[in-house]
Length: 499
Picture (cartoon, rainbow, N blue to C red):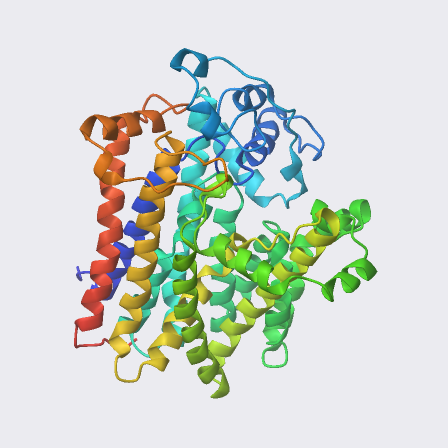
């Protein structure tokens, strides 16, 4: 029996680090703190228990409605700031909460079909246990971006050493942890988006047909992929057949959505604005403000509480990324085909987010250019960033990987430990002016640390105990440090195995 190749072992290690880091997030994240999580879960529960896909105006199930009057949640009855000021006994009592609906019924159905099947496979467990099981399904789905991201990197970069460094960057980006670890269709979108890009690069028409069809049935924003995929039509006749097959697989949902809402996506934000209104809005659209918000919500944001870190941190990472994009522009100028295709996917997806932001401004008065939507092109973004910086530093090429992995790891470690976990557990709270004070780790003794993990177990199954979360946290730290250490190792290792 042949022993596994070193490349395969390194790839498995990176994959494991991604799963370990995400598993801690999935277990520790407070109930319904993921974006729109309760509405996503409510649709799954109704589909699994009643066999029907509810309309977006349907009320959430009774257990979900009851939980919204007991847990701190956006659109619920109380914030974390308010919850932790209550006496311990009062925290156990229900409080008034607004009525909630299954508004995520506007989404395509594939993820909900799969999650409902998992729900049925785990009968008799509590709602909190169902939530964690589906969170882990979302995480494992998203983790496919690691092996397929590596395969994409092999097409873009000349050696397996460099491809592994780019894959390390995929695993280290914070957007994957806070996007793929709650109940939502984003985890499946991360996987399918990566597979579509890989299939397009490799010219695998059958894989492209089914992956793109599944993607369109997962998130409507995958319509943005039609433009870069369409650019391949004049090169490959098989791509046209694959696209036609994908549209046949998913077209029924879009036709029905168009017929009932007048919008291809069905998103409530895009249903009401008229095209003429959106065209007029473009001329006074706050481009810089929208771009800043999109960047903040892509780099790091504390889930549905929308926590943010220091402004200079966002700006520092943005400057490094802009430098890297200069290197990407040089590669585009040289007409590097894989770089051109990856850039096309990212560009057209950014255009789709801008379109959504304009529609949001018309419909609600706010330019909601949410950066976390770009998680489905996470692998292309990471690979382009690495390739651009690697090209831009002719005398220090080995620094490209560690620059980004260390930077993203530092942002995540700082943000989660100084802001997110302390806020969720009542150790810090918003100031009257809306600001958030930084938590001081030096003020935390052993008793305080144990109290923090005990509070993270609230509204969780019994098997998510403080010792289990403590072990998960230590594993999360080890996995994060391992990504940084492996990045440094590959940067200084002299041999580069050919792909």
